[in-house]
Amino acid sequence: MALISIDRERGLLTAEFQGLDKLWTLKSRLEIPLTHVRGATHDPGIAREPKGMRVAGTYFPGLITAGRFRHNGERLFWDVKNPDKAVVIELADGESYDRLVIEVDDPRATVALIEQSITRA
Image (cartoon, rainbow, N blue to C red; front, side, top):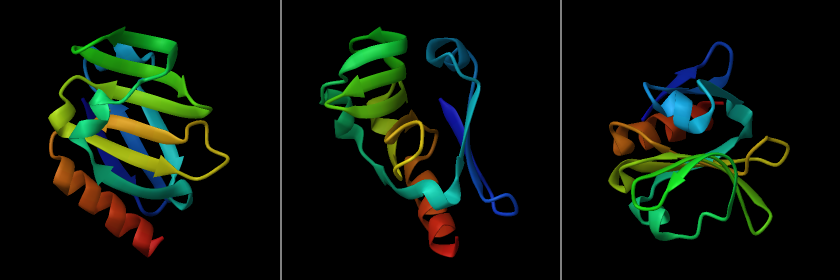
């Protein structure tokens, strides 16, 4: 699971990975400029979609999808064990990833936080 925070002063969205997720994803955090965030949605169904090719990270079907993946030319970052808590964050061109698919504690609140923050940015 990840903690998503917004630093309005620095204009950053930060995803900080907790516990073993740091090991599974091979990352401890991601920082994305708010100007590069297009939007966010709560999407439990995304876990049923093809993941593509794992570039780095961990994949045990039905248990955990974590790390970097490529699918149809799209660069994805995953950190999901419980699909019901999956949030998809769409990023602008020029970022390292096209989409982040991240499990959070409260998907609705996280989506609201991101959407409000990018509207203000």
